Image (cartoon, rainbow over all chains, first blue to last red):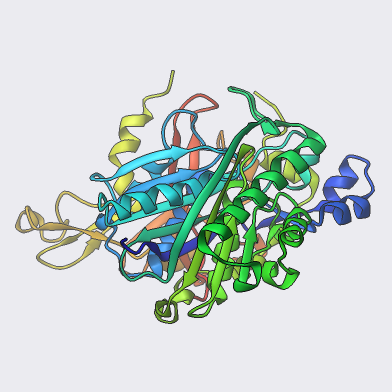
Length: 349
Length: 139
């Protein structure tokens, strides 16, 4: 079967941060209990002029800066998000235009809570394997909503990553992918509503843990691998604790998870979460290293990937675009009042 | 109902998204926004103006801090508007972002970034385009 994998990658995380303790103080909660309980120190916040379209464009441009692909050779763009700026008018059209990939291109937006971006990777893989396209760009990006005062407000943040998927010059080969999907209403946002709702603790056991564990086990059974075969493991990160707990339940150790775990420093970037985690791993990965990635999207499903880094990663000019560590270091804090303004929590006509 | 800006915005997408200017085929001067003909070479340049994608890198020539903003920009005050001279020569006006007011210096190196410029309320279209931010020390 034709090889398929990642040709290049790029990410974007807004510069603004708010500390968990500042959100907790605004709502009269104990800052330390909340911060330690969730394992989140601070989260990224989009400014008034940033949304999923701008983040997706920056991530896609970063991916293109690291390779020599002619944008006109990109045959498809799929943007996964649950906070697309338009309910009707695809974000992908804006991205395609902004990177010079129009007009002969397949475009659609995806939505599957936090796993829409990994679903986009699978679609691009299939199109490349079937030779319908030469390259495809899969993007996971969000400026996720959270109702004021809701537990989600401590985590819901902004960021995204883009992966150019192709069959030649791949820096990381995708050996296998599989998915695990059921009808599990753990988290949702109804049509026309501004904020999502969730089932509290129900989002854990039957939702996040069941889907990721079942899917990661299915993947390792298909590929004949064990947790110790992987250098890195990336799991969806709605908070700083779940990914470490699911890793332990599957037999991974914290050292395998650390490089791809960004939630404590940027919050939950939803569709961007595992994709930014993978970007962080690719920032430092060496040839031959193996990566397991398992995303999770409420509703509910998980996409898992078995990835092997190739020799070509040494030739990829990773410094042509910001590394994840650059985004973590380049930050500016705001307080809850400014946060309320930036997140449109204050209504005025 | 949206206002009449949509067709105009749509026509200007190449400039707003990708800084597409043009170059006179006679004297090689570069223009942004693109011009129908070169004001120096006039009729000699007709049919010889060629589109060119500008790098988006440049330096700050001058700036002003906006404290009394027009409608839809009130949430961002105080914010800087600058005149930027691109590496290729043309000068343009743009908002400067991701930079504290006290850190802005004439002559500082900037690069373009893709941002939301404005929107027609909660119902109308969203207009995207370039703003400028301090140049990150990456290639």
